[in-house]
Length: 68
Image 1: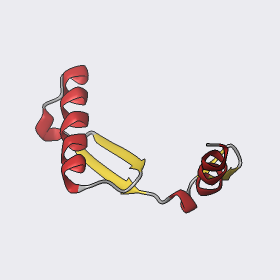
Image 2 (image 1 turned 90 degrees about the vertical axis):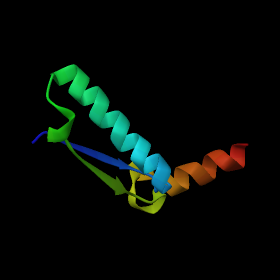
Image 3 (image 1 turned 135 degrees about the horizontal axis):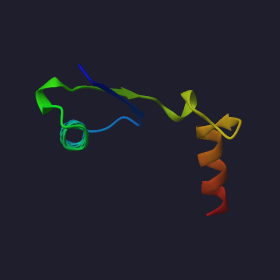
Image 4 (image 1 turned 120 degrees about the vertical axis):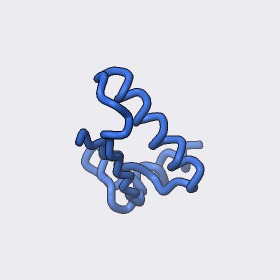
């Protein structure tokens, strides 16, 4: 079974459904593997649990918000 992992922000249920549908359709189209074979995992991560460029994403977002 082909498996797709997506790590990102918490999403509303409808957006999760669309993301899973989109990933599955495109992966099936590109690989020729039937959609029914794909497994998609959505893992939410808060900005306090993600580092970008050597700093917490929450700190980076706060700094960017201050700049306006």
